[in-house]
Each structure stands twice: as structure tokens, then as C-alpha cells.
Length: 135
Image 1 (cartoon, one colour):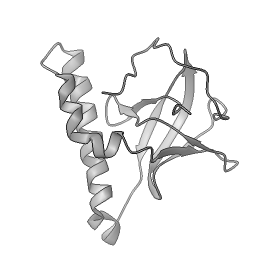
Image 2 (image 1 turned 90 degrees about the vertical axis):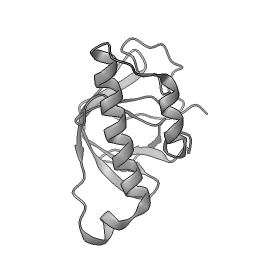
Image 3 (image 1 turned 180 degrees about the vertical axis):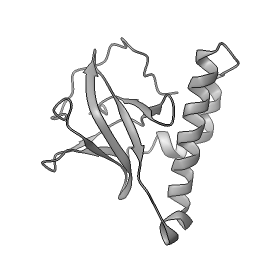
């Protein structure tokens, strides 16, 4: 399970990370997943507001894209259950190892700087957090 609790202690980024408050594009491999607005770094974890990319037609038939959408919904639901004290077993994340353990997540800033990140956590479908991928 990705650990994205506020205040989590992590290693310093090994490659440049985006300037705070500049929008980022979020990718899974070559697939644009969405835009992260107003990213902010707190104690080694990035937080931002997420806007899902608007995909149409053939894009929506892409199995990887459908899987990412399922992951976003799962992550938001998991964090909701966690916040209200309902059952949220960490083992549930194992179903998404094809998404979380791939090393394919990255952000790209306005200058084109690409940063590889760990799979992001979606606290709601519009709240996101992530950490720099270890080297």
C-alpha cells in the first residue's frame, strides 16, 4: 500500500521535482491521466488538486486507461473508508499491483521536466498525493 500520510518522512528527491504551485501533467507510461493543480510539497510528500483528463472514443477502450480509472476510484474509496473509521485492510492494495508497482507513473511540468514518481494516492477523486520514486 502506498504510504502518503501527511507528515510522512521520506528521502530527499534524487531528481528535480516541480516548482510548487505550477500545474503538472500526470502520466501512466504514455497515457495522460490528468492535471495536478497547485502541487505543494510537505515533508517529502507532494499534494495537489487532481483533474481527470477528458478521454473520448477509442481512448476509453484502452484496457490500461480503464484500469487506471478503477484504481483512482478504489484509492478514493479506500481513503474515504479509512477517514470514517470503516474497514480498509491494506491487503486490498494488492489487487492493484499492476498499477502501483510498475514504475510507470510520472509528472511533467510546464518546462517539460519529467519526474518519475511512486503510484499516487487519490484521497478523493480530486485530491492527490505522491512521493518521488526511489532511485
